[in-house]
Each structure stands twice: as structure tokens, then as C-alpha cells.
Figure 1 (cartoon, protein in one colour):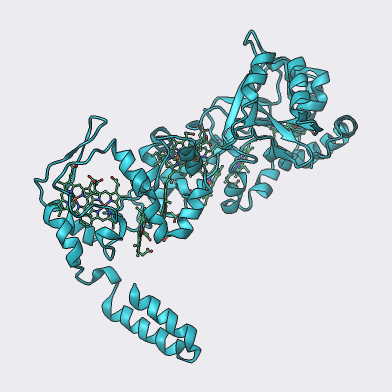
Figure 2 (cartoon, helix red, strand yellow):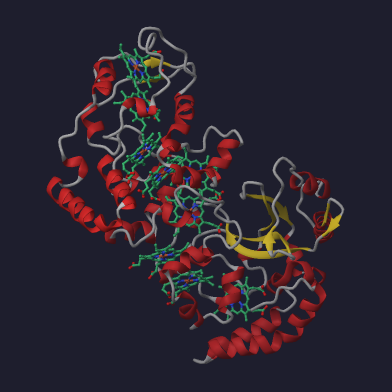
Length: 451
Ligand code: HEC
Ligand code: HEC
Ligand code: HEC
Ligand code: HEC
Ligand code: HEC
Ligand code: HEC
Ligand code: HEC
Ligand code: HEC
Ligand code: HEC
């Protein structure tokens, strides 16, 4: 550690010696091997702590929540871990020398101890802490959640192995809390490929980030993440799926790739000026109040209710904004989002969706992003999709209910008929729907066009 810093400092002062210094460092590394392989030892300071804490029979501390916390620290395991070079007091700096270990002090819970230690990590890991502070988990902690993770939930301060070691995959820190999602992931294409083929296949943090994580379904959800690895997806899907860009926008990837999932149409409130999902302001929860006021009998929102809500959300503090609904076909639960199957099981049949009364369109919800980004939802009566006047607000999704179903039947006939189906269907669709699309665009005038 310190030798590394010194080398860096001396190069700042004398650039000419940079190369020599680098060589010397390289030689050091080669001779000494990995820094932690040298026989590590505790400092005298730390030894003093371990005089008591390494005793296997040190009494567990009684906590105020009724549980107990082991006070035993395994010295050898500590020396084999990442904080080998840190003294106990680098993190535990606030112990009272005079009374510590002699007078018992009250402690509410293990969580309370973790909370009291949270800021010490910042001293040495500023970058990670900053990322974490910007993430959803930290936002939940700030809101008062005692379930959302602190640093010490995901990292074992005493026995942390390298974060690069994630095999077996059960070691991923996320599994402890998101156990149902983990169980699904473990058995899906990515989990299985991770075990069989290693790190090219994503694990939790590869899709969601470890520190600055966000609500999973915000905006386009994980679409861009998927496309980062599956780069040629748009081209490959275009071979059989007309209007691929529109389908990718209107359907989350997992909707087709999690074949047994229950699906639903999510009508999301969007601000047309910024083209972003509407978010509730922190501390001003309007969504729940407003939908309840519209849907007093709790039977699902009607078209008139939706119109009224668009009006209300469009009128913010005296200024007007254009708010519209963007439909998205998605799976109903977080578990189903992690049950991706091999490609031959994916949803391909056009009439799974383009058919009157398709199961995928039976469940409809209205949603807004809460202040932390996670969705708030309320049920909508599914007839809304089929109504002609919902045109403007519900954008494309009316097509799947009824109005143009005849037209699509005809279109799909074509698609099945010939080998040039894909192109033809696409071209025909565009020609046949041009009038409608133009009318829609003119009617809504929200500035967003179908691709
Ligand atoms: C990198 C920071 C760090 C270092 C270094 C560190 N600790 Fe801790 N220690 C923590 C955190 C964080 C907790 C609370 C976390 C928890 O309970 O999971 C903790 C908790 C404890 C506890 C309460 C029991 C427990 O496991 O929660 C004891 C006892 C303890 N540390 C002793 C030591 C001793 C002795 C050393 C030196 C050998 C040491 N610690 C080094 C961060 C550190
Ligand atoms: C004389 C024995 C002794 C020594 C030396 C000692 N501890 Fe402790 N320590 C204890 C006992 C006993 C407890 C449990 C106290 C209780 O039940 O309230 C404890 C509790 C703790 C806890 C849990 C939180 C708390 O405050 O109760 C931490 C963390 C801890 N010790 C760290 C250290 C560190 C770091 C050192 C060295 C700087 C150290 N201890 C030195 C005996 C000792
Ligand atoms: C929700 C779990 C989670 C929380 C909370 C968390 N981390 Fe991490 N951390 C991870 C994972 C997973 C990795 C490894 C993947 C990566 O590098 O992003 C990691 C990596 C790291 C690394 C190693 C970076 C590297 O690549 O060398 C450090 C240091 C670290 N975290 C510190 C912290 C600190 C400090 C906090 C608290 C502010 C924290 N972490 C909170 C999950 C978490
Ligand atoms: C006194 C400085 C210091 C403090 C305080 C400290 N760390 Fe570290 N930490 C280090 C050093 C040095 C390393 C090893 C080199 C590295 O990977 O950065 C390390 C490594 C890590 C790693 C493993 C990184 C990897 O590449 O595998 C994690 C995770 C981590 N620390 C988390 C924490 C957490 C959580 C806390 C607070 C409880 C904390 N650290 C407090 C200095 C510190
Ligand atoms: C291949 C990328 C990928 C991987 C790997 C992945 N997820 Fe997800 N995750 C998603 C997608 C996609 C969604 C659904 C987002 C949406 O609704 O559009 C999601 C949703 C979630 C949600 C929100 C669930 C809800 O109730 O709405 C959580 C929590 C979550 N994932 C945790 C995890 C955990 C923990 C792991 C590891 C066991 C993991 N994810 C692995 C892509 C991934
Ligand atoms: C200490 C428990 C804990 C750990 C560990 C943990 N989480 Fe979470 N996480 C939560 C809680 C609580 C929530 C908020 C409730 C919810 O949405 O499930 C949450 C929410 C999330 C969400 C947002 C869900 C949504 O509705 O959009 C994602 C994504 C997520 N976590 C991913 C991860 C990943 C990735 C890891 C591991 C690197 C991880 N979590 C580790 C407790 C944890
Ligand atoms: C309308 C349903 C549907 C949607 C939406 C969809 N897929 Fe597919 N996908 C399929 C089907 C069906 C196949 C199998 C095609 C075949 O027969 O080869 C497939 C194949 C794949 C494959 C296998 C190899 C390849 O590239 O053809 C990957 C990877 C894939 N999809 C990823 C994605 C991603 C990423 C998204 C979101 C951007 C997505 N899919 C959206 C239905 C869909
Ligand atoms: C870190 C890169 C990465 C990310 C991100 C990623 N995948 Fe994958 N995906 C893979 C790998 C690797 C495989 C395994 C391919 C194999 O079996 O050889 C795979 C397999 C698949 C398959 C099965 C393909 C087949 O041939 O049967 C589908 C479907 C798929 N991924 C969809 C998605 C979706 C949807 C997302 C986003 C939610 C996503 N992937 C995110 C790397 C990634
Ligand atoms: C998982 C459900 C699903 C599947 C499977 C599916 N679609 Fe779609 N399709 C949709 C949705 C949702 C839209 C978007 C409606 C909108 O916004 O206009 C759409 C739009 C379209 C459009 C454009 C209509 C317009 O408004 O311009 C055409 C054409 C189309 N699909 C044809 C097909 C064909 C052909 C297949 C089979 C190869 C197919 N779809 C498979 C759900 C699906």
C-alpha cells in the first residue's frame, strides 16, 4: 500500500524516474508475489483487541432486539481477507479505551451497529460510496428502510474475499435478500450459462449495477443492458418480426423470453415535453389519492377516469404540460423477469398477441414512477384498450383490442403465406396504417412518432 503511494508521489515530482520506478515496482511485485501472500501479521494495536476477541469462548453480546451477536473474530481468516492491512481501529475508532470490554454497553441490533459503521467506509472508498449514495438502495435507507442494504450487508468487513470471486454463484450478496429472484435466475438461461461457461453470462450486478442501482423497470427497463451483449438482436429479430423497433419499444424483452409468465399492459404516465416517465415528487404522493378518488368502487379505472387523470397530472402547480400514456407489455412479477428460457421457447406466434381477447391484454394497469423510481400501479378496465376514443392517449395499444383486428388478421395471413412475409408484412403494415398513424399523430400531437 504505502510503497505504491510513495512511488506515485515521486513520479509526480521527477517524471524522468517514472520508468525506473515502474520497473522497480514490477520487480517488487514479481518477487513478492501477490501482496497478501506474504505472511501477514497483526499490528500490536490489533493484537491488543484480539487478546479478547480471538478467544473462542468470548461471550456473545446481548442485543436489545432479543438476539445475540458473536464477539469472536477469527484472526487467521481476517489475515487471509481484503482488509489484512487495515488495523481494527482504522474502522473502530470510537471505542472508549477505559471502559471497553469491562462495562457492557447497550446496542439495539446488529443493523444499528452496521449503521454506525457505515460512514467509516467512506474514508477509504470514496468512489464506491458516492455511487452507492446515488443508488436506489441508499435512497431506501434514507427513507428509513431497515431492509435495504448498507455496505456491510453486501461486504463482510472482516472476512471479505476478493469481489471478483463469485463462484459458486450463491455467493452473490444479492441472494440473501432477493432470494426468490435469485432462485429463478439460478435456473434460467443466464444462471445456467454462468455456471457452465463463466463470466460472459450476466449475474445480478451486471444488469442492475452493484452500487448505483436503479428501479428495474424505469424507462426502457433493462433493454439497453440486454442489447449491450446481444448486439445483433435487432437484425436477428427483424428476420421474422416486422416493425422490430416498435415491438422492442412496446414489449419488454423478457415478456417474450419468459414463456410461462403472466403478462399485462402497463399504461405509463409520460411527460411529452421531456419524453420521460412521470415521477412523483418526494413527499407529495398524489397518485394513490387521485386514482382512489376516480375509482371509488375499486373496480378499475375507466376511460373517463383516465382522461380526468391525464388532465390532473397535466396541470402541475399552475403550469400546463402535455401528459400521455405509453403502453408497454411486460411480465407481472420480478420472479418472472428472471425466468428466461432458451430461444426456441420464446413467444413467436403473432396471434399470441394479435388476437381478440388475447390473454396478454386482459390485465391492464396504470402506473407512475414513485420518487425512488419504483412503480406505483392501479388496475384499469381492459375495455379501455379497445375503445376508439382511447386512440390518442393509449397510442398503439388500441390496435390489439379490436379496432384494427380485422386488418391485422389480413396482414398476418400474408405473413404466414410467403417466405417474403417479414418484409411484405412490414411494408404493408406501414402502408395500411399510414392514414391511421397520421391521424393519431395529428390528434395527439405529442411529438413522438412510431419508428
Ligand atoms: C474495514 C473496516 C473494519 C475493520 C478493519 C475491522 N472491523 Fe470490526 N466491524 C466492522 C463493521 C462494519 C462491523 C459491523 C458489521 C457486522 O456486524 O456485520 C464490525 C463489527 C465488529 C464486531 C462486532 C461483531 C460483529 O461481527 O458484528 C467486533 C467484535 C469487531 N468488529 C472487532 C474487530 C476487530 C477485533 C478488528 C481487527 C482485527 C476489526 N473489527 C476490524 C468493520 C471493521
Ligand atoms: C478486555 C477485553 C477486550 C478488549 C481488549 C477489546 N474488546 Fe471489544 N469487546 C469486548 C467485550 C467483552 C465486548 C462486549 C461488550 C458488551 O457486551 O457490551 C466487546 C465489544 C466490542 C464490539 C461490539 C460493539 C460494542 O461496542 O459493544 C466491537 C466493535 C469491539 N469490541 C471492537 C474492539 C476493538 C476494535 C478492540 C481493540 C481496539 C477491542 N474491541 C478490544 C472485550 C474487549
Ligand atoms: C447491494 C450490494 C452492495 C452494496 C450495498 C455495496 N456493495 Fe460494494 N460491491 C458489490 C458488488 C456486487 C461488487 C463487485 C462488482 C463490482 O465491482 O461492481 C462490489 C464491489 C466493491 C468494491 C471493489 C471494487 C473493485 O472493483 O475493486 C469496493 C471497494 C466496494 N464494493 C465498497 C463498497 C462500499 C464502501 C459500500 C458502501 C458505501 C458498498 N460497497 C456497498 C455490492 C455491494
Ligand atoms: C483504512 C482504509 C479502509 C477502510 C476504512 C475500509 N477499507 Fe475496504 N479496503 C481497503 C483496502 C486498502 C483494500 C484492499 C485494496 C483494494 O482493493 O482497494 C480494501 C478492500 C475492500 C474490498 C474488496 C475489494 C476487492 O477488490 O475485492 C471491499 C468490498 C471493501 N474494502 C469494503 C469496505 C467496507 C464495506 C468498508 C466499511 C465497513 C471498508 N471497506 C472500509 C481500505 C479500507
Ligand atoms: C439479464 C439481466 C438481468 C440479470 C442477470 C438479473 N436481472 Fe433483475 N431484472 C432484469 C429485468 C429485465 C427486470 C424487469 C424489469 C422490467 O420490469 O422491465 C428485472 C427486475 C428485477 C427486480 C425488480 C423486481 C420487481 O419486483 O419488480 C429485482 C429486485 C431484481 N431484478 C433483482 C435481481 C437480482 C437479485 C438478480 C440476481 C439474482 C438479478 N436481478 C439478475 C434483468 C436482470
Ligand atoms: C440487505 C438486503 C438487500 C440486499 C443484500 C440487496 N438488496 Fe436489492 N433491495 C432490497 C430492498 C429492501 C429493496 C426494495 C424492495 C424491493 O423493491 O424489492 C431492494 C430493491 C432492489 C431493486 C429495485 C427493485 C424494483 O422494484 O425496481 C433492485 C434492482 C435491486 N434491489 C437489486 C439488487 C442487487 C443487484 C443486489 C446485489 C448486488 C441487491 N439488490 C442486494 C434489499 C436488498
Ligand atoms: C415478440 C417477442 C420477442 C421480443 C419482444 C424479443 N424477442 Fe428475442 N426472440 C424471440 C424469439 C421468438 C426468438 C427465437 C427466434 C428464432 O426462431 O430463432 C428470439 C431470439 C432471441 C435471442 C437468440 C439469438 C438471436 O439473437 O436471435 C436473443 C439473444 C434474444 N432474442 C434477445 C432479445 C432481446 C435482448 C430483446 C429485447 C431488446 C428481445 N429478444 C425481444 C422473441 C422476442
Ligand atoms: C453480460 C452479457 C449479457 C447480458 C447483459 C445479457 N445477456 Fe443474454 N446471454 C448472454 C450469454 C453469454 C448467454 C448464453 C449464450 C450461450 O448459451 O452460449 C445469453 C443467453 C440469452 C438467451 C438465450 C439465447 C439462446 O440461444 O437460447 C436469451 C433469450 C437472452 N440471453 C436474453 C437476454 C435478455 C432479455 C437480456 C436483458 C434482460 C440479456 N440477455 C442480457 C449474455 C448476456
Ligand atoms: C408479445 C406480443 C406480440 C407478438 C408475439 C407480436 N406482436 Fe406485433 N405488436 C405487439 C404490440 C404490443 C405492438 C405495438 C402496438 C402499437 O403500439 O402500435 C405490435 C405492433 C405490430 C405491428 C404494427 C402495428 C402498427 O401500429 O403500426 C405489426 C404490423 C405487427 N405488430 C405484426 C406482428 C407480426 C407479423 C407478428 C408475428 C411475427 C407479431 N406482430 C408478433 C405485440 C406483439
